[in-house]
Length: 557
Image (tube, rainbow, N blue to C red; front, top):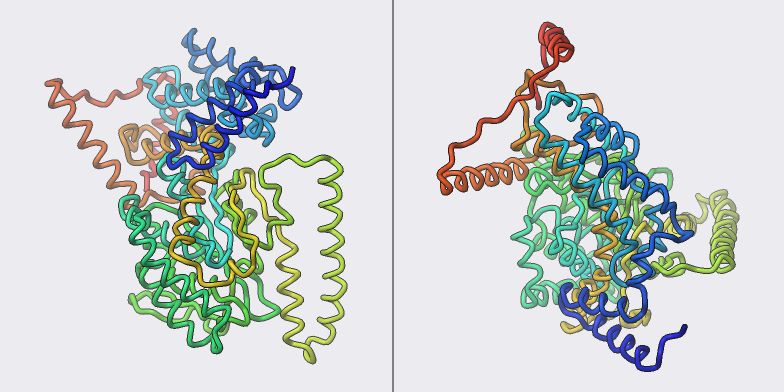
């Protein structure tokens, strides 16, 4: 049964209101009304569909509910242990989150709610049935098994201010991942996020402040593309970076904000490999230098030598024989490296790189024929570039500039430009003249607002797909530094925990504030502060603990 003319007009009007919404609350209200009229709300309520294994999800949901109701704690732990997977039964499939405007199948949301409740229940459980060691082993293992989400910010010149709007939306909804990468213009935004607290970031959301910085940014990029002497522009870019990014190393930035920032850079020489700079691979490198390198467009800015802080706190060259250029050339979206370093397996992409448009699906399902033709076209393009790259490399000494150009083009086309959730502009910016010209204040503010609005349709998908990983992250922090931290005699830190970074000063300060708030509430209600309950060990567990104590218990770092 088709949609009536009246309903079609209502849907068109609601879509227009969604596109013009200035807050996520407004957008979500219009989106839910749209689903009501279009029939997608009914689609959400029905379990059955060929797009995922609904029977498996329903079976596991019922089982978890029954185990909690029967107080079968060991059974609950066992069931969760075997089934903490992000794509269980195909419930992470993209099409399940793109049909309705708001949310996905109710069954999937109910299942994730139940897993979330079960995890929190187990973490806070005081029972002889499950020891502290069992709980800690489970949560560390499950955290690695389930994985984490990462936000990747693409390059894109002056369009990089679009990323700030995306970040603002995710942060306001409590959905900004702690793992964030950026290249070129995305590196500048990533560094701003990684060096400023949530409160400090509000400065960049103020339109007056945005305009002030945007004027400087536009001037820099305008000179980038049309200036006679690129080297003169380096000082302008350095001033811009200095205004927006504090003089911190990657490690110092991580200590301040707890955000794990990575910046992509590409080698200026042919026989070097691109790198991903972060607090793990290069903790003492200055963020400003990394951003300068990642923004060094070949032929526009000269290559950049990195700077790092030595053991005496002094700045010195880092890898002084090497220089680096624009990171988007080699690794615009470094998903594989983030996966290896941070156990990330779910990627949110904010994309404004014009080169990526032919490779990006814009969160819409293509036909099988369209997908096949697109893949074939990309493959043919790569093979042609490989052929000419081989010819040019043989004449490398004679054609050094051509060699570098072909290698750069090969690096650009030989990349993956999409993630699990892609956030792309819903406004038109394909005009090269607008992209490369001096943008007006209104254009730059519109970019930020466009980033906010473009992120709205992805919010619920991000909230649902990342909820379990966010909950496990919260629980582990409580075990490590918060109200659930056990005595050293009750556990030893498992080997799997070594892949987790140590808590930052920001984490410790946040937990301190939480404990102070909790203590003040107890005093206000005139209740005696409850002593932390210790789990009474079983004879078997007590014997094991005794043996462990003889060997020496390793305290938490």
